Image 1: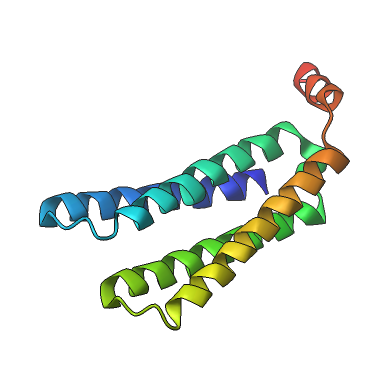
Image 2: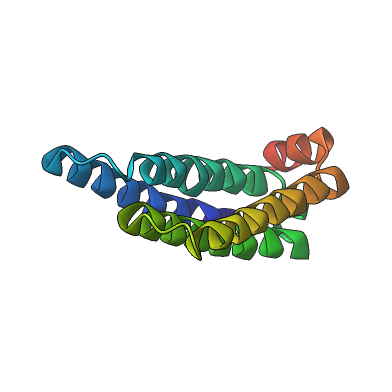
Length: 133
């Protein structure tokens, strides 16, 4: 799962850079919040999660890692897609509640990461796997 997190994170990074470039060229910054969230959640959070899972194989191989991955990606897509639509149409309904639903999926994904870390990560595992190479 760690490698999957890193790969999808880089895709979000490129998407965010493209959005940033578009906003700069068009001098239209209405989607600045989307740009920031895709960078923070899509790129940074996914990349950090990927590194964590690569460093801790027991957490990487758990069902919680899979739930974390899919909930996070679904949450980003729903939240950011709805936020884009809200910002461009300026219609709060139905987009506001859908943004909230995407955010709830992101929180659930973070809870999966939290449980996974407490259940499957200890510093000795990292030291053992690093020293055995």
